[in-house]
Amino acid sequence: MIVVLKMASALIASMILGNWFITEVKKSKINNEPWYKPYFSPPGLLIISAMTILIIFGAIKS
Image (cartoon, rainbow, N blue to C red):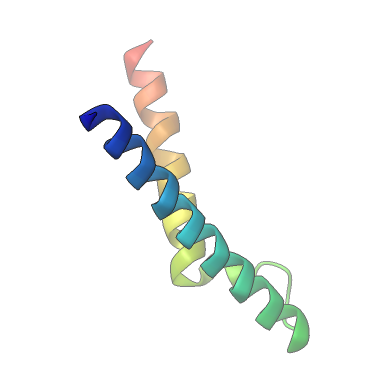
């Protein structure tokens, strides 16, 4: 039961972060900003840092 709750909370958090990032992308397109602008917003930086941490942990583990 605890494992299911952990998985559900991770899924919900990723959905919220993804929707937040998509909102930033749409705002960027409406304002004719550069394509990389959403990646420097808070959700973009969170996504990039999470991916970087996963890559680093994967490299250290293997």
